[in-house]
Image 1: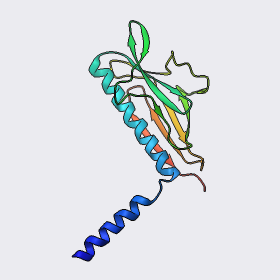
Image 2: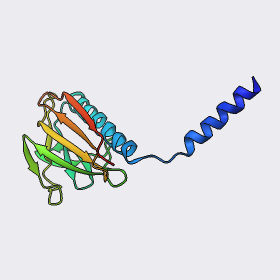
Image 3: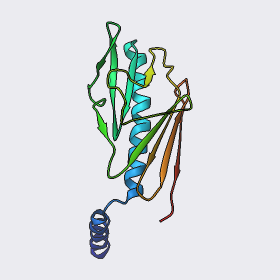
Image 4: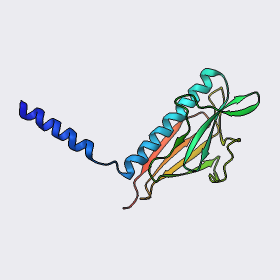
Length: 152
C-alpha cells in the first residue's frame, strides 16, 4: 500500500513538471473564448442591455451600452484578455475579414443584444506550429469549436 502511495505521488510530480505545449495553450485560448462568449450572452440577457466585444490584435475586451454609447465593461470575468504564448487570431464578421491591428476600441465588432442574439462571427486562433482552433458563432449564439492540429 505504501508503494502505491509513493508511486502516485511521484507520478503527480512528474506530470506537473511537464511544460505546456503550444497545442495546450491553443486549446486553453479556444476554451476560454468559447466560455466567455456564452457568459457575455447570458450577461446581456440577465441585465437586459446590449453588450459587445472588441477583438484586438492579441486579445479581446468587452463593452456595455451606456446612454447610446459603448463604454468599457470590465466586471469579472469580463476583463480584457490576451492570447497565451505566441498564438494569434483572425476575426471574420459575417464572412468579412477584420483587420485587428487597426481595430477601433470605440466601435466593437461583435454586438450581443439583450435578446441573446448577436453578430455572427468566426474567430480563428493559430499557434506557431500552424495548429488552429476555429470558433463559429451564429446569430442566436450557438457556438461550434473545431481544433485542427498542424504539421510539426
